[in-house]
Image 1 (spheres, helix red, strand yellow):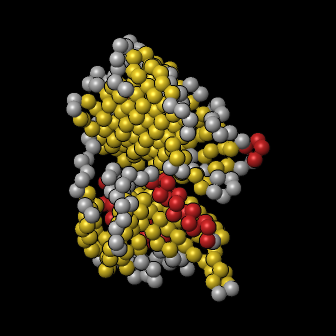
Image 2 (tube, rainbow, N blue to C red):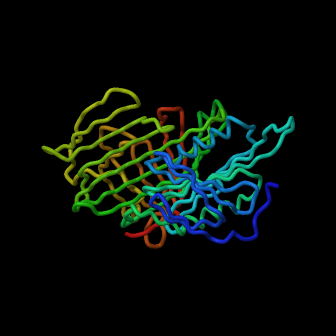
Image 3 (cartoon, rainbow, N blue to C red):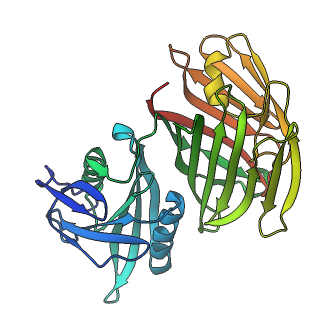
Length: 374
């Protein structure tokens, strides 16, 4: 039953409501009553269970939304297997598909279930789709992709440039002691646009981890910066969350008297204040994936990386290697970049050699799946 698929998708039906227009490969789409959080519609694809999709109506962390959905499944059943099926970006809109196979007791007997979830990303109106029936995994992924390619949001103003990275990481959790790994997946979206004569850059990084004890953890990093035409940082906000709880929040104010005022909070601690002195070339946010294309002769810069150090600047160095390889080194972090013929990074593998807040050593493998502009 887990191998069942539909030969062809149903005829497309156009759905318009709550500021969105979307083509749904299915019949009889029906909306339920909307809440402040979202509006849900269901449609028939010719299987026993319908596909259910919720338009998210307020800012949401993709990993945390999936975390909540998967946690509900975990509470009811015996998990057989679970994995990210794919992360794609048709026409620049991320589609993150996840599946969970499980056993459940029905009438004193063990029955199989198959939960599928897809996050269809958008700046203001993302969608979470779900289907819970054995099989139809490829069909569900095709339906989600089809919806993503014909989805209009009336309130969205498209950014001028977009980069989307699919994350395929491996985190070693004190491997010498546990001999076990944690495997997160997710995506990173970097968008830029011009506003008030400045460049606004928004980076959203979402990762979903399954911990050793079987629990889930959603990790999100959100950065928004404003930079002057010369590239120097004007102001910025940096937030890191675990399971939708703020672990670190850093705010950088506009420069004054040769320094940026900075405030930061660690977890639920007290707010701390300080200043970041502006280096001669101006303060820059660490963006090695943007600089890698210019690293053929090497490059040294002073950068601000609040995820690594919330109240100080760090040195970043790009080191060329043979062929299409560039290495970026910053504090205890290093990253290997593979460049395309035009010099833009296509793949990055990174490692942190120092313990983090948790006893983690991290290595990663990210791959660009979409790029527009620049």
